[in-house]
Length: 266
Image 1 (tube, one colour):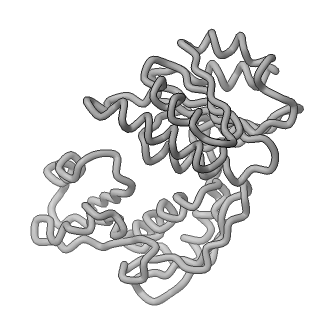
Image 2 (tube, one colour):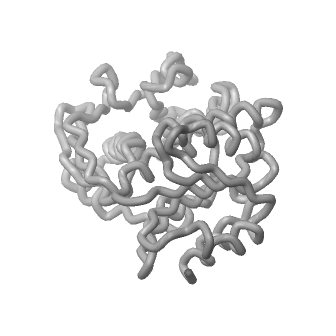
């Protein structure tokens, strides 16, 4: 049985990711994001050349005809290494999900799945709690993406929020394990939210001071800071409006499912 590893977005330095290779079985199949400026430099692992996936057609697996369907997901055509193509709808919103579909298609081909089976698998994908899960209540549309967070995934989730029709609210908490760069990286997320004209940014937790400060510089963005979840929950009736689209995202330790539940009860 072959051992598959598919490495996607940049959560850390290349060294941390490639340590995974040390624990692989013999004759592994390595699937790497070829659009990543670090992963694309991997030439060989234990005598095996990686197989690359990405949006650029220089990759063995790549995507074209990418069509955003807003919060209903993305439709695209996946080009497989054997020359076949698969046109499928990814039901979880966000263009970053195309990379996940490509990684899945590459793994499926390595395991002998047909293009039809790959298409069916992609289209059966549904979100789970905390992972880009859309919750529609009588008053709100909640984007529950609170299982975990890093700077890249925060920005990707803001892109998803930006697809919504109506007022857009980002409830963002601390991102953990960023070391000495934590303040700078939180500030970058705040700047990005303002650039995307998010209507309201709510930062929760000590690390989000810089995020809120940078978001408040946006011409069209209001930004508020809260010390903890309870402070935000108490303020919900005053700051969240009927018909809002609300993104909820933070590192797992922030216990943001508590906030999702409070919004559902609004």
